[in-house]
Each structure stands twice: as C-alpha cells, then as structure tokens.
Image (spheres, rainbow, N blue to C red):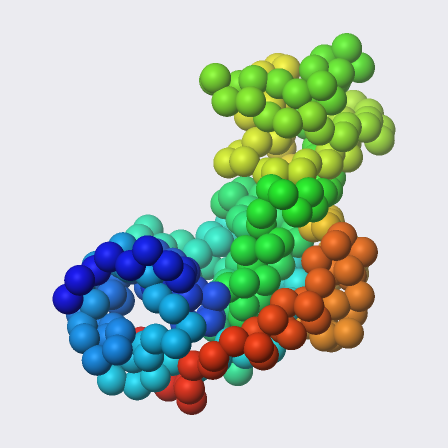
Length: 268
C-alpha cells in the first residue's frame, strides 16, 4: 500500500481525536497491522486520511467522536499520570470508577505534585486545552523551603532560562512566610516538565509541596484527594467560551463533514 498522502490528517491524529487511543497508542495499533484504510492494511502511521476514507480497526469501522465531556480530578501525591506504569506504581486510573469511558489527561502532574487534573473523552478537546496558543493559565499553590526575595521572584516574572531552556514569564506572589517555609501562588501559561520545581531550584528554593488549583477556567474547588467529578456540558461550553474555545462551532463543522460509521472498539 502506498503510505503517502498529501492531504487530510495523520491517521494517528484522527484516531486520537475520535477518542480511540492516544497518538502513541494509535501508532502501535497501526504497526500491529490492525488498521485498514479503504480495504488495505496500513503499514505505517506516516499516512494521511481524508474524511471520505473508510477506516477499520480489527475489521470494525471507527465511530464518529462522542460528545465532548470533561472531568475534574484531584490527583494525589504518588499517583502517576499514565494508564500503565512499568514500576507498578499507582496510577490515576486506579482511582476512577469502572463505568467511566476511556479518559485522557489534559497535560500532566508529576509524581510528587497534586491537585487539579482535567480529563476528557475527546482527543480534540484535549488538544485545544493543551495548545500553548490557547494561553490558558495554570494556577498553583506552592510551598518552598527558604525565604523568597522579590528581586529573585522578578526573574521569574520576566522569564528565566534554566539549563538552556527558557521559561515564559510567570505570575508570582508571596502569600505568607511560615518559619522556614513560604507559600506562593504561581501562574503559568505553558507548564513545561517540572517547570516550577526547576525554576525555584535555580533561585535556591526547594519546593516541598505543589498543588494545582486552576487550569484555565476550571477550578479544583472542594474536591478531595482521589475524587473525580464530571462538569456538566453547559458549564463546560460556557467556561470554554470565556477563553475563546467554542465547541459549538467545532461541532457544527463536524456535522458538515463526512462521518465515520458505527463504533466498535476492539483494542484489547
């Protein structure tokens, strides 16, 4: 089969946006020879598909994407933000009820961080919430060991480079000093790997607790550790519109495109 196509979207991207699997998982499914496009087995994920193409997984057509749904979860310290862990550590999925659909995390929280983690059944919504161009602020409560000085924090407010990686300007305020520790509120618009911990270390401050309390318009609220709660669809759409993400417009565009047929997801 010719695995080159100049138009359309990458097959792994289409499967991810349909909520079938993450892009990485979709690539594995393709390399296992389980995906057909227009009757031919796909041998490489480096292939684009059109809306008119017929895509089968294990002989069954993929479905049109489900309605976008969103959950808030209080990730505890020690839970890994992944479905499986090669070290057999507890994952976020160990906390979820068994009747939930397949959920994808929006961004990540590292092992020792806690607080708000958004999850969705929609690859498209996940992508929009994670895109740097969406400019969504992630807000954290951070406890550090040390006495932060305003002159040092100004480095964070103007942008700082750590190990040749540039971190965009942060919003930083000192809430209170408690003996050897200080509580800060920090806002990011990107959230690179361990960004806050690395930035604080650069200033000589050690993070000993990090809690995400907001992600864009969504808040941790009164959730307790390990609890998960779905946000109703009207609230999701209303909240997203405040940050210029319009799901209604996106869904209207989907209705005008050719649809994939009935769902059947035999991915085990």
